[in-house]
Image 1 (cartoon, rainbow, N blue to C red):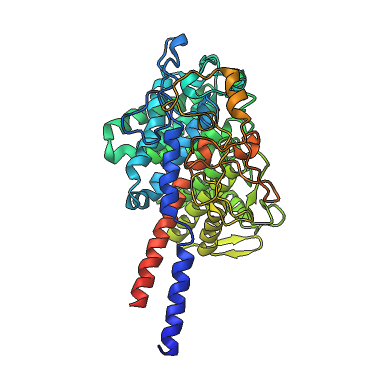
Image 2 (tube, rainbow, N blue to C red):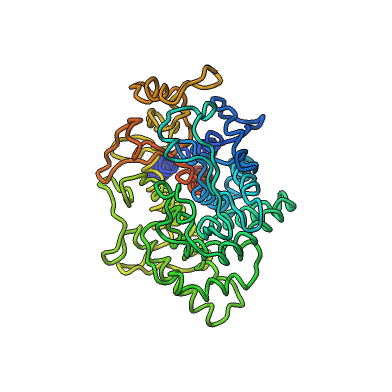
Length: 504
């Protein structure tokens, strides 16, 4: 072999090894499996997580409404409407942005099932035009017990918002979820999409017309999912998704007219979460700039949204003057101690989406500390995903079930107790704590695809069921990863194809 062909062979091997360091297709499959583990209600015949069984079958009965279904948000058994709706919005956004890639990986059907399990529940929860049931179960009583969902003896009381007890944040987020899902289902199930859109319209009108924070109406939510950011970000967020679903100019006008009053062009953010939507709002608004027929006023305000969106992106890339997201020694973006991985996953998704936006617009990103290329954005998104999959100081995957080493003592009631399918004997409230919670052994059930809270600011992690700040997983942690995994898998295929062609 001459020198030139040796160089080509080395390059080929390097590209192939670099591209296939992680199996993103496998991570995608596992991430969608997680949502089946979090299902409440009567499970379908094609349920793949076999250690789970039916649960919450009388939800809403006490109040005379059918609230069976939906998702448990984390390791407990309360159904919280605000994070559940955000989960569905992010899943829908992932499918909108990366549906082709998800389909190429053979997971499109499972992605739609994950969305529809949530939207079917929201249809039930939106029982009347100005009534939305936003919580089932009580966090305080639920946390006194350590039981499987199939054995629940805790309160299943349901809580609602209505015209006298408003909740613009949760109504707005649910409107956003329904509108985003309507876009996803428009081609596959147009009748269902129309039903979702009707609910979305009514919920947006309810949220905007009866303004107020939901945790002022539903006090039981305050200790668990309080609306710290207020409801203004959800109203802007919902309006943008309504525009996406309907194409109606009135929603763009709403976002423009309310930009200053609601903080859309005022808040420069360094996080994006189930509570704080401003960065997502600003990125969605920025994407409208590539559309035609914008008025001078609309374009001017949307440019201000874009400026704030790029502050968030630059902060993730450490390219702002002083206002950047902290990084751990291992390179992970770090926002706060409790469940930090949600911010990592959300950042990876927004970086990926914005890189695609810049690519289509033929633009570069100008940060205070220099020009950032599209490859820089994509590289940072990949770096964050690779960190959570195992490229970190501890060599552990924080996506449960992925890779050779991952958390085995996840803070999750159902996963930590023998499966109902194997042992139908009733496990009482305190019995679960005595016999299962404090066990030093790994969980008997692997909750595949769950993204746990993750390590601290020094990359330290303790795999302990009692360490709920780090070992509990949430649906909204995994949701944004669906799209990112699919896109990274596509990149591997493209590199693999190109290197194969190159070598031949």
